[in-house]
Length: 172
Image (cartoon, rainbow, N blue to C red; front, side, top):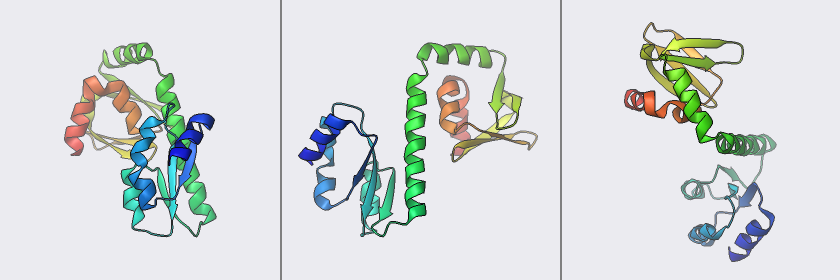
């Protein structure tokens, strides 16, 4: 694992494939020595029992040794989505965040964008919301459902101080 850390520090990959052997998993704590942001990990093994251990080490996915092309493509899409979300989050300055929160919540209106329209809804009309992959579904008091093309993490980041506590309470 020491050699792997040196290579990760040198090449700064976005993705690392890892065989979740007992030795590799026990040495996972050494990743704290990585100087740069950690890459995403996809674990590959013939032992299904290693999946739990892999996810405990924050692997983004677990694949069996008999790699199926579709399963590999899905895993790679998860990595791309995760990297894009992290990049977007890092690029979103705290000043823009504060301005956006103030502009949108001062009126009590939430702007929800979907792939084909923009809905304006009153914050007080939201019963709850739920994550649906990269989408968020808002359920309103009038039983209307509004699907957003943004994931729940975006709304949490933008509106945490105003309404997200209520979302957590209502979902759990």
